[in-house]
Image (cartoon, rainbow, N blue to C red; front, side):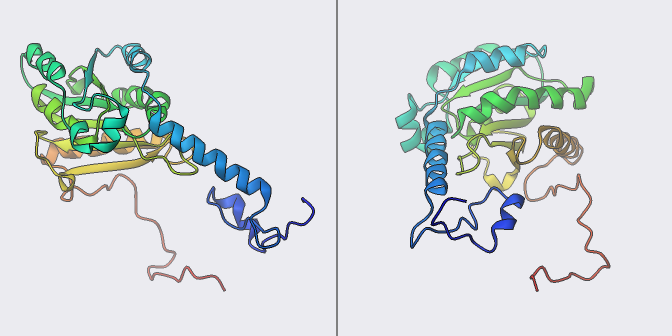
Length: 262
């Protein structure tokens, strides 16, 4: 232990969580090591927000799964505009809208997958293609897929016009979540039945914190496949569709017990 650092009596709890608890103190200040770790985590979170998506690498990884891709861009021309104008990230630019119209789908498909950088391109580069691969294997040949759209400077709602243009019954948006101080690479997943512009967040289902240190990719793929199958069966998503893919936590006897210590 560094000389002069007064340990916190709760320090044993630190092995159970990445949260910054029980850091101890040096006089009236935070010890040097935790302070430097905080500054590093803050820098990593800022870098994740400003990082530009390597769309070509993501496309190559998805195409290696045997799935075609489609490169698109939101109406936010660059990162500063994207961060200042969330509304532009929810719409496609003119060139992307024309590209979608030119595709002229021959008929309806079951699923459109949209990969958008969101607020963490790092999360997308690390986890999006592996999650798509796991989902594709779980759904099998019973699902008809549209080309996987990869959108730069995209928000969640950008999936709605894409899903509509691709004549998809369901759209899944994989997007980088806002980084936390211990999670610069967290991926979010949003599922919407009958996508079209104007859908609200109440009409979507969300799976959050997809990453090895959060919800593992295999578990996320299983949960997503369950939601998709149920959404197709019930023809709805959002608040009317509860995630029942895993059993409720056992409370050990029926009655809720206190979580307080001591």
